Length: 194
Length: 194
DNA sequence: TGTTATCTATCTACTGATAGATAAATACGC
DNA sequence: GCGTATTTATCTATCAGTAGATAGATAACA
Image 1 (cartoon, each protein chain N blue to C red):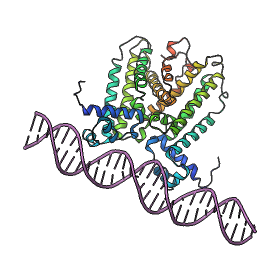
Image 2 (tube, protein in one colour; image 1 turned 60 degrees about the vertical axis):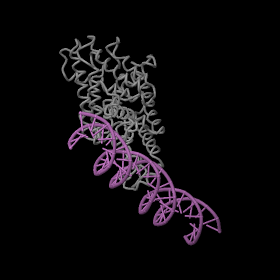
Image 3 (cartoon, protein in one colour; image 1 turned 30 degrees about the vertical axis):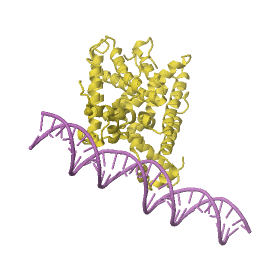
């Protein structure tokens, strides 16, 4: 947590993450990161020899931080919708505060053009986040006894909706479109959607 | 429709679209498009002076084709879920056949780093597709009399789920994750999801 | 002749990456 | 504690490759 007065290594990851999350992996450069940090591009290479190294390091840190923020899947209210709300709140935070995509949603879109090391980290993010959501659902009355395949379907659908929602909200310049995704969750209303 | 024996202009759009949909706007170049078509990069510039022009033209054609394929929003079965299935089928087609993202899902992710002309086309895609979905829902028994805001929420959520689903399925290398998104649509099952 | 479509050749800017110099901090032998 | 050796962190300078873009020649065709 504590970061020394001029933690170059940390700042490199911070700025690289911000650049990837706003413009994408292919639209950021060593020079751009270096400029943002206030060093030369060779210094960024010192910490991360290749761009793939840097990208993978950013993704790994992001995933760890994300899952840490989610916390214990079994914690919180007992309704099945609670973990879905927690996911939404976490995504909403980054989106509304900084107008940034989920890092791995961005990487996932670009997946076919990414170095393998980076692509692997993006896949790991979704695997772990799906697992968390399944565990959270399984730990609640609604989920107990449900077949794993069904829990997985609901988990994937929930995360997919959040990722796609960020894209649409950012593209249309209306972040309320994303907030509304939480509003009509079937279980919170009398009638289910179409 | 009819394309002459060596329709360079058409091939340029075809290959540019394929490149954007697999790797993203920032990861394709005039040279790459030219090579795929079998001409020199200057020829691509002849048809599209700038990269923004080319990107916008690709997006415009894509949106027009997509909405044409969707057809009349009021056509088809009367269940509210019918238009959602039509959207899913259309997205599924491109994803499973060629492993490609929705063009505008890709552009939407990269939106903050796109030239304005391209960003505008991406926004237009979502605006028109949301409008189509709202019209399709409103034309069915389920949707009649529903407030516009609710129809919009459902439309956005549906499209968001598809876009995010493509990202997750491609990233995890398991296209069945996308197919399953259609399986547990609330209205098609007895009980609603969580 | 003028228009359309294509080429070759080139420009500047930027990319990721490397080499080598340098200064400061740290560790080690005594 | 002192002097030396090593490591750490940063710089300058540069590389080959590629980016988007342009100029101008050339051929085909109306």
